[in-house]
Image (tube, rainbow, N blue to C red; front, side, top):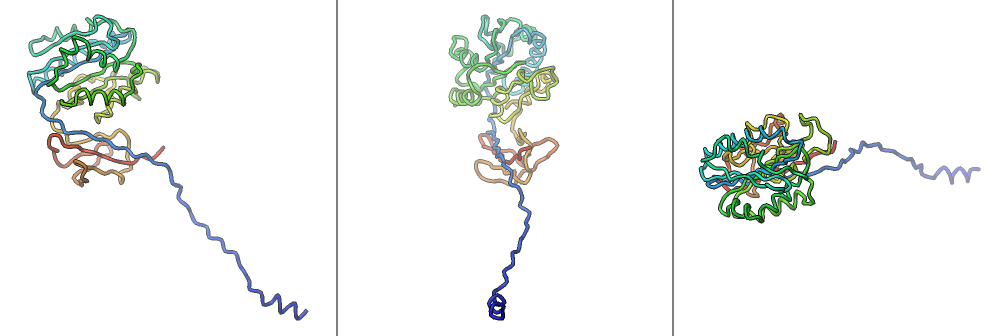
Length: 291
């Protein structure tokens, strides 16, 4: 027994210690980059309204005319060398009305939507693409003029052209001039009575490439249409499309980080402390956490 005691008594005691640590769950994140190029002053401008003329849009025509008439006045504070045209979203005859210019009257603009053919499909992207190759389109879309495309519809775009493909084509087609796009559509949380199929997601995705969001067609959008374009003059802010993690926001001017900015959560906007020069690239990167 003594021998056994000596053998077992000399064995080292081994203990098991358990350390409990809190491990923070790492959630997946998404990085968003938004950008804009500071526009130059507009000298020539072609404005093309791509209007859904299906039956459900009939009661929107008067508002469209008011909005374009107000826009016409805003344009004339910048340049008199402009023209405005309307096409429908299926190029169904008569598919083009215009051009209207400084000599056109309010009545001309008022009647324009009513003179377009009735749409049998809502394919705004396809209509713009096809129109650019028609005789009217070739004459109207001047090579030396900046371009403003205004899409107006109470349904989503229904052609096979994706927003990214449309954006790439617009960049290539109008690479020597400035161009901009505005979407007046049914948005999420719209004031319209709508279903999810009415939301203009493709139009909204297209204008996101130009640093903006869709405008709700069921609001009084006509008074501030020009504020949604490059016609407002130098830009010193970027409205963010998503709610950021504030500490993740970074701002670049021509690919160089800058600290001359601030963020206001109540407007979800990054404001610059300076006015970027013409042609400057402003980029805002930020992280959004999944809900």
